[in-house]
Length: 82
Length: 158
Image (tube, rainbow over all chains, first blue to last red):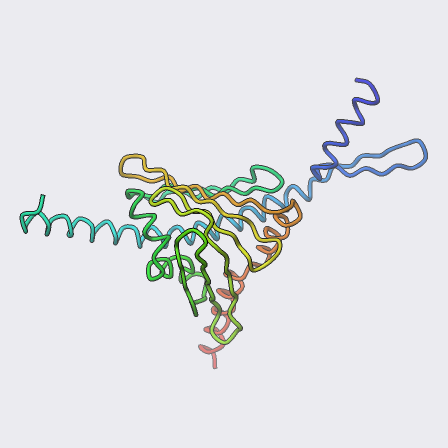
């Protein structure tokens, strides 16, 4: 790989927050930015838990609507509606 | 059996939350668009909070406003406008409580008795999405739940 190619690759990783680089003189040192990745995974998991709790409650509401819907349909039939 | 909720960061500015519900799309849509129904699930008990206000004017250009909080604390307000309303398959709204608010698109895909709900949030910038996620850190639901537990413990021992 050419030096220019390498620079491009590192640049992409750096933008994504996966590595951090520091240039001292002619030497650029790269280090893994793993902590950020783990942190983001933890944030996303918290967000998932929030929506999971919400959607569990939505499940309950939707089940109730389903039951009412069935009763409604039965009553209609009993009254002779199509 | 409980369906699972997934969250994916699709790009720097997009978050996608999805879940399947065991009901036809029109019923799931109804639960997202009637205030008396939405109130019952948007802030579930486990959040330790309750609604102070829940107003929805579900039509294009119509506004919504949610206010909820934890007992004595000042309620948090969330508000915006509906950009698209297509029953029973699609809702788009803005989140105007902050300049970093997303535009939220929810699609309800009827799959013959079950419905796939996909909620897509598009943030104005990468930083705005990062800030929302970081806001989950020490997030309010757990904090309040813990506070409740603490109060019970304190009350019980007193």
